[in-house]
Image (cartoon, rainbow, N blue to C red; front, side, top):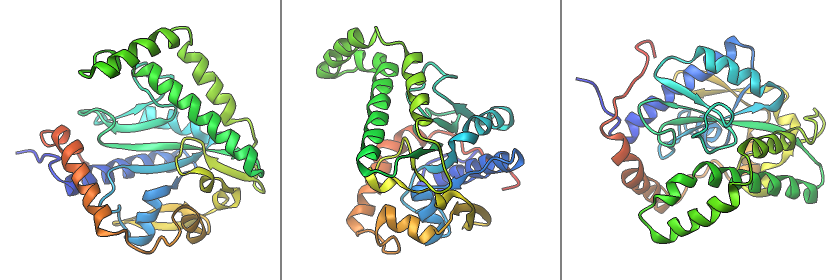
Amino acid sequence: MSRKIDSVDALQCQLWDMLVCVASIFEDANVDYYLASGTALGAVRHRDLIPWDFDVDIIVPIDQYDVGCRALSRGLPPRYRLRTPRGDHEYEHLFARVHLVTVHHKYAHVDLFPLVGTSSSPWLQTIHRRASKELRRLFFYKRGMSRMVTSAAMSRRLVGRVLGVALALVPASLVIWSFERLEFAVPLKADGYCMNIVGHGGIRKCMPTRHFHGHEPGLIRTRGFPLPLHVEEYLTRLYGDYSALPPEEHVDEAMAFFRSWYLPALREVDLEVSETI
């Protein structure tokens, strides 16, 4: 009998398998990548995925991003699929994602975040981030319009119809093109500043590029992965006292969210992992 993804442990087993697949393909293709955000925090604090985290975050320098995506499109096993804004007209994000093919991409995935150059000026960094946010919001609504129009909630249907009329005049290709221009607006210099252009978290996501020139070894379960250089400084910038566990209420809320949102969609989905992992 096949095992189902009916618990956090089962989901994280699937995510671990997915992470190993993505990392192996990147390494074979000589693509630089780093564990990022909560996944990097898990590697440092838990030597595992954070027990109440339900996805995987990887960051890839923008000059290697397309190479990495092409390598994944060729090398992923059949149980996984690469989604990109240009490659899938039903995908609503302006970054790439690898997910389990037997369930919607939002439930079991590895996010591939582009690392781009940005200004050293906090004011210009803010403009850069806001431009990214508005383009991503526009793209999300345009690609997700059909779901809003057919929503059970009358208010969402009304918003969907209004946005549908407004966004019909904006080609998705134009939004993608504009976002790609934004990704290369500032060169990714070794002595400059950089950011995850699709990340949340405000100005603290903008940091010196030196964190991504070289790497530190990280460990998740039994396998090593690259972490940003000076990883303690990187995590402190993102999370403050990253070594401290969050309040129990935070963990309880995360687990309640898993039970209410993830579990109904995943509990009948087969766990599909490599026998060698």
